[in-house]
Length: 410
Ligand code: ATP
Ligand code: MG
Ligand code: MG
Image (tube, rainbow, N blue to C red; front, side, top):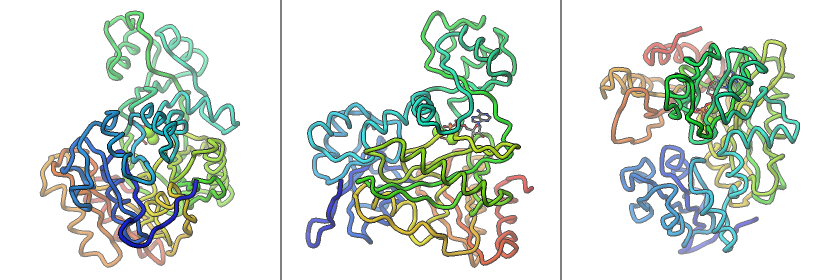
């Protein structure tokens, strides 16, 4: 679906479900290409996006509230999302009524349920870790026997930053009960789920050598799919802490394989797969590439594109969902890195601001602050992009930032 840019009093309008940092960074780029954004967010004018658009363009309400989603959709040319945990059913109803939802409700409904996601990609021959449906404790025990230990249990919906995941070291009743408790579905200490159907599935444990992210962009008419270079996505406690672009210590052919698998995965979603997609991949010791999960939106591992590529993931998301020509995904610098700024363990403002204050004094660092009103330990507060004409030049700044953020340097 192609939407035309407009000249004059009525810019092209994009309504975004969610006004967090990803929405805010879209909104910072939108006016430059003639797009006006509206947001729906539970915190209303206190959300990160509300600091960069007029408050008249913010609707306060739950991301699953049908009436509020309808209000957002009423006056815009395209409805998009900055998070997958939204009222997808309402978006699907709106599509039937002629609203242009990008990516489509069908695509969102596959992605927001990690198990359906895995089934979809399996059916399309995308390489994956082995996985199993585990709706009962008995099924978890069967999965541990067949897929081996440790076993990764994952919530089908709603997880992020590893919060919907639990690792089983043994299949004992006690360990299963602990895992179910962590995942919010335990009711008894003997490993029973009280007969309830568990909203979980299991994955075989992958001893990966590194995690890679590939940002894929696809146009709303499905005519064009492109990818940014594969990057190292370095995680700590299941939260992305550092990204190195392009990926280091990965052979060129494996990097290209990652990009190919990522593009094939997004193309397999078919019509309605539009805008940016964050594709998370594992590389194993043997050099196999396996898809972990995808996100239907700009992604943490793509933040470096703001300062290291011709067109950022945020502008390309808007171009993709509006059916405009896609922008170049090429890097314009030799090397780049991104460091996430998390709320410091002490939770204080002073400690949390240390890395970005240091970055403000670095010649090749660019600070991106999210404007969150409250600082909590571990909360994503901003990120710092670094660019360089050589790794040696950039890495001296990178190590300073890693030391302040408390990220072990290897
Ligand atoms: P995000 O914040 O990226 O949405 P999430 O909560 O959806 O994360 P996953 O991406 O499924 O969680 O997993 C979080 C991390 O856990 C991964 O980045 C990886 O480090 C580890 N992990 C996930 N699945 C496996 C697996 N099958 N084997 C080994 N490690 C895994
Ligand atoms: Mg996820
Ligand atoms: Mg993930």
